[in-house]
Image (cartoon, rainbow, N blue to C red; front, side):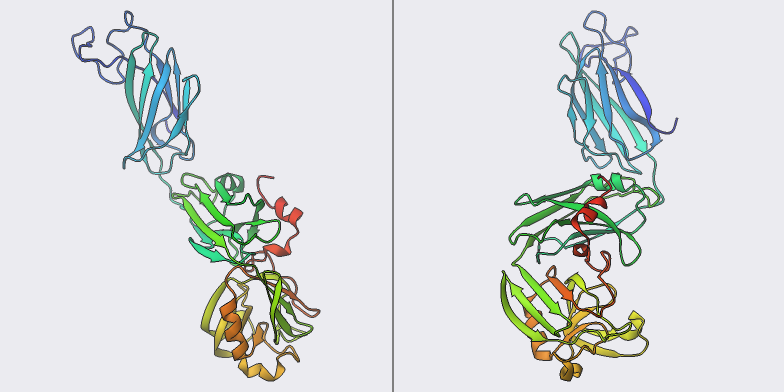
Length: 392
């Protein structure tokens, strides 16, 4: 039968001189051999068992008429599926779930009332899958990031069983920082889950994410067939205050204002306005080609731009804009980005790192940066952020 079949095994003693009534030697899993005079054999139940069973469940072993001394579950590559015995030896459950398209061998050792140990092996295979879900995550491993950097996982395929996926995400910090996961829609339209603290990270915090997703069914989007992990460190506090009304940008490091420089933001009154709210520096991209057609602004510009720092997926950057020098500190005349002189941009580019927050305010803007448009998590109130968890 396909599915989670159940095997009931009668275990017999394995000894060099043991034999069945017919004179043939007893083998693992066969009923036979001395039982009545050396202790009744234990009855062991293993689930699942059979061929093409459904993945995504743990292996369970129980014993009646004896106790489990040990249970070992290995896959075809010899990797062990760890687990734990019940305190009374009556059962064992694997810590991880079985994965699609795999074969497993279960080796069980039991102790009978007569003090003898019996060993038996069983095997089962899991059904394969036509759909595999994958994850793109940030930040990368062994990086140092700013105090506003969330942990962000974007999924290739839809996640309809969000609770099952979220349960497998374990985040630990060096100082017990508390936070919450929240599900949101990425700017690409894909499902995404981010973790952030209630307030900005404390500098020096070490963070580790372990996503034990292998063998987890995401629902309509298919199965995960691997685990993911990353670790990173929170660097010094650098907060960028952008006042579009005053056309200036101020860098605040560890609570102290370092420097204020004149800028020119998005042109008021239309699609070229800038976003407001907190945008987190996503990446320092250096010199790149910027083409207005990629952000729906027609053929307004197509040029190479130096010291480019991405703030949103929708195309807002902070960067050098020497062609707008006459407007720096005087008027907002960009196509939505935060422009500065070449000299100021070179200095500023060297000061900041991904994960630093840009706190942008101004009267005439396109609105607040959405949570999935880059890292807009800080524009959601803490109660609303917590409510986005599938486990609340």
